[in-house]
Image (cartoon, rainbow, N blue to C red; front, side, top):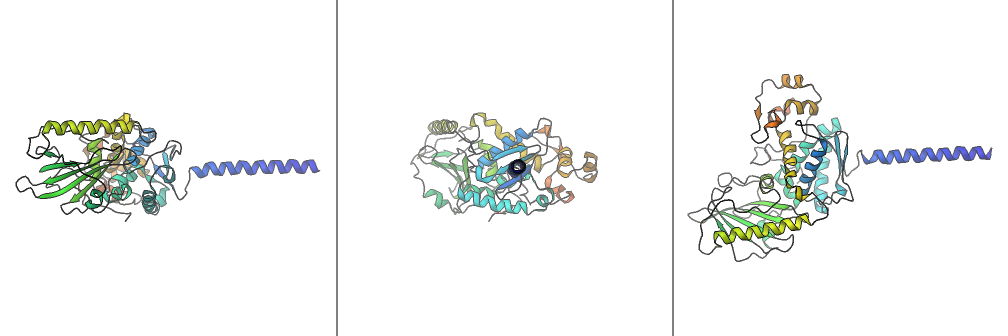
Length: 377
């Protein structure tokens, strides 16, 4: 009898261990306070969830995630990507801000209905909303707070033939000390020399660039003034710079009191090459040697902001025919850079037809937006 009791106890214990292990494994892929469930929706023929996971890594890297390999804060399961912000290598301040955004996401009708947020919506909320980008990368409200951290060199560059600015630019910079350097672009009116606005570049600890836009009084703003510049929002800076200090593409005139064009050009190249070496030497994070992977981030938010009927059928759980019928009164377009995405709708036009309401995104990712959201502050 005693042996039977031992046997029964043994199997009860074994059963409890199995249930415990199952629950722990399941818990890894379900809701916890720091976990968020992202839904991947195939957007083009060659799209895969593995590619999108890499694009997500770059997006998280842009806002400061160090992505330590040993913590594995990103997990793929079927058509879902789970992220745990405790394991992504964010600063404590960034984690607190990101938790506020995650709370808003989890309270949205989309998440309450589907237990997920569309991956494209999430990436758009991270880098396509300037205030979110600033909060997560800790760009201060005042330019003076940044200037107080650096000693600018006397040497400066002058740009009168910019491919970005519609005005003239004065480029000041500090010396390079590892991943610690600052660049200040002062947009000036060519005739009077009046300051119009400022743009800043710093380095994040993970090797990415941190961008800021400030008005002529040094107050932080969401985007460059399109009257004076084509720089747009920080997301456009991210897209244009491709995680690098960009060299001078156009020839410039020489101006008294500033570095000659060729000297300034060589100086930026030295800074650029040194920065690349520093990034490539990092043990964690994105693979900077595969720099074109940044395009995978752009495809995530572009295909969300400009979805095809095929993508919407997955997102909304409807047939392509139902989608096309529901959106029959709306015009489509083809993306000028990524024509393979097919015939696309504008997200702002179609959102009223969605079967659930997602957390509002800014109406434009790279350019000045009619609606600029801020769900964090």
